[in-house]
View 1: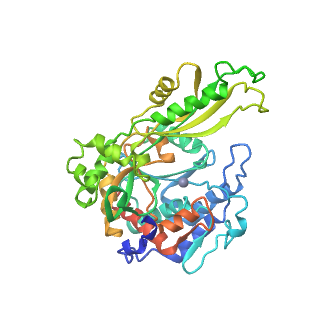
View 2: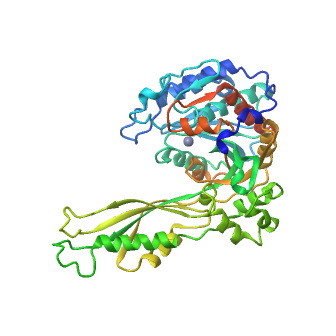
View 3: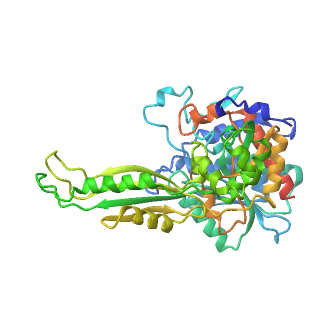
Length: 465
Ligand SMILES: [Zn+2]
């Protein structure tokens, strides 16, 4: 159902900000898309395109340059526009400079060079047009518009663009620790999040179009299970091989799985949606979300699109260590299991559950871990104005709080920002997104780009002046 939504059916007030020069803005976006800012680790990255992007930003936004200071932390970018009232906590606009590379073998499928910055009457083409240079440049466009209309704002505005969100988020971590060292506080932030409109059919409210404003993100955890074996000839496999014991352990995990749970954010989503829910199984349950939280979580876990919102998910992704021949027993066999943690679930919780489930003869170790994000409140400065603005520019939609199931840089700013909002105000059609994001022929329509700039400008007008 989601792939039939026409985004333009939910666009309004496109005549706001007549001083927004869309041709010029599209040209600046195309110049940014022509820079191949692929981050391949600190030692092997070609940083020349990152340097060029920094120069492009400094040259393209004269009022930002005049009223603000731009600096680089590593290859990440921090721009501060000091507000007239330094006592007010800042507004923080986030994005990342890096893009994923073109998938090898798909080069021929691109209609235009992914790093050519092609612009036509309808589209701006290129890798990063939807993830997330449109947001990076769009935030600058909105700030430039704000400064040219109103001059210096009351509240400080900070733009922070990490260099490696797609790989390690070290850039965002470095920016956040520098802000913290300087004693900078932000009241709220805006970062990438859910991008498309979604039909609420999964919630039992078909025909209702949703905009998700994400208030947290799931954690990331890789766990390795190791089953020890001594190898040898397989004529006497007394007690089973290491591989068998590993498979039994994985089977026990798969049969058990972490239980579904309704986090406060998803409970609130159901609460807001309640008047629109017309289909079972949620129709009766949403009349009292708190009392029915357990049942709602269990039902939601049966729906593909809701499953990751109510479960710490578990994916057995890698297995290693099988023997070299059919008549030889394997030595150590191991499997790597990827978990995505619901806010409120810790790595310790998961590892304890894994150990209890697999039994004592399997070694369990943590390989890589990013905790789940803090769960912020769906109200107050930043959130309220964002909801108001999204409703203005995207009528016929319902704004609901949610959580990001992948990763974003936002989580790195928890120490300096009171409310981390994750929503991409540039709303393409779902089919554009599913094809273009990390895929082929990534592009953004001029109309979508302009509307996103209006949303950010209007948010700033309501929060920083
Ligand atoms: Zn991104």
